[in-house]
Image 1 (tube, helix red, strand yellow):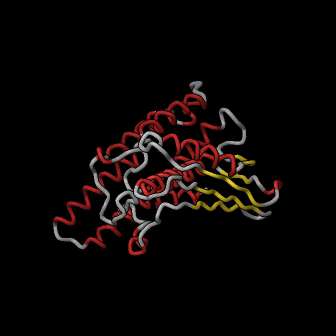
Image 2 (cartoon, rainbow, N blue to C red; image 1 turned 180 degrees about the horizontal axis):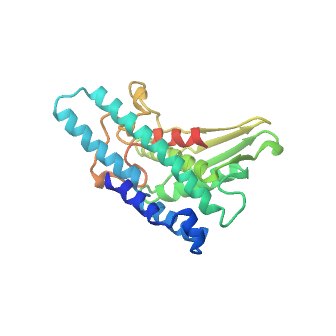
Image 3 (cartoon, rainbow, N blue to C red; image 1 turned 90 degrees about the vertical axis):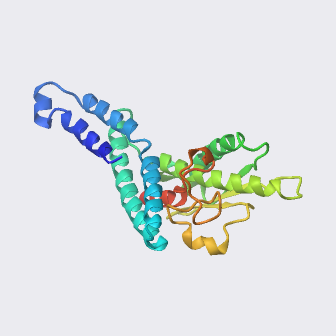
Length: 259
């Protein structure tokens, strides 16, 4: 795990120095190849760091250390790691995007309703691989059409909505399996805007998170799948595209703050 950043640094350093690169005829596209290679190598870094931290948690608890102190330490570490990764990823993506469009990764006319529609379609396709029936996602818009779009990094919003909807769809579908209702209730995304902001609300009937667990939902060691602060496991067989490593909500919050 720890040698990955070292290999990345060596890869970048192996590229010709800026002045020497210009003298030897290297082009920005050559450096773009290096960046693409870095992105490919690092695409599973959050998974790797999370598995490492889960193992570290087990070791520290086995040594008798306080669970609350261990979780606080791990959350702080992953927080710094994720923040750094988002920044580096944004710079890399911006550099690569400028080869295809002059606007970069920021969409000046991002339509949250359209992004929500695409995210809902993807989340439902994933859920249908695990449930026979999943809820529909209804999207409503309130406000002036002139205020409907905002400048935003669309892939970030898409990622945030997709992950939130996977949580909602799974919760509603599981709730429906144990209920007597014949119809599965829909999930509603309400988009509202004015001249200064756009707000997205997601409503579902999935049962919610127990009050006693809510203080833990922003911890990287918490998973909504099991509904327990101690539920995150390093058992890969228990993970599906609908329920991953338990880092979803705090990770989404980081992306939301940086969008």
